[in-house]
Length: 341
Image 1 (cartoon, rainbow, N blue to C red):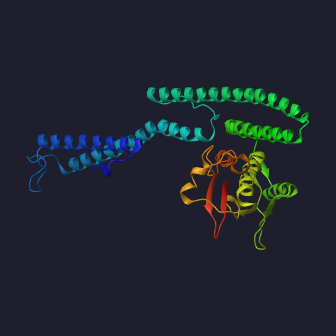
Image 2 (image 1 turned 180 degrees about the vertical axis):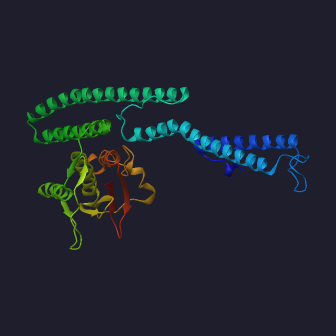
């Protein structure tokens, strides 16, 4: 019986009104025929007992049918009218996860719907205030931490011992990388960037050239039958950073990276593949979590900070796309970024 009950508010309101209309008409007909008697028999005349004339009886049924149809239509329109504010509120809740700075909802509908919309707008405003406070805190911490690091770097340059100077410089560079990665992750999607029509092929080739100039084995894969990717409207700096983090991860663990762009009418797929040992299937989702590292040591040079893939995933989500990891055959890891057109 539970399967027959609609799951949506509109369906339940419509069903309730339909049942109420049908029940009221059935009760009215039962009482009417109980008072007026059975339908007329053909052998009895209009003035004799046996109920109203046939024409009156047919007109009564037509009147009831028209009223029933009108009430059914009114019930459907009313149920849809009452459920619209709730549907708008649910849609706004979904959009809030993609854009916290979306315009506030218009308070309309019944008293209950207006109150729910007002609470929802207050919640959104409070989240925006907390994000703004977080951004100010991140900026202050960034300044306060980099100032003493700069002083330490300058003092390290004055050390006479070459070994100590190199050790100090390496430790300072490691601290700077850790601070930069952590602050970048805390900033998250706070940086607002205007989308532009981006030439993907030129952007990816430029990224490959930058890595090759620094001595890394990074290549752009292409086949003779593959056409260049059509321009994509997206945030250029954010996408470059996302792919750059994936390439950094491939270079660190796989010794190099191959980048491939696969175009489609509804989406663009950018793959970054390495030829390292890969990742166990049970760990493919775990490595996307912040500060999670497969390597047990605390060596930043080989283990990293554990934020590169997390930042890449956050950027992909901000661009309305997704990041997924897959083990390649016979070895290696493929990081796939899928972006909608």
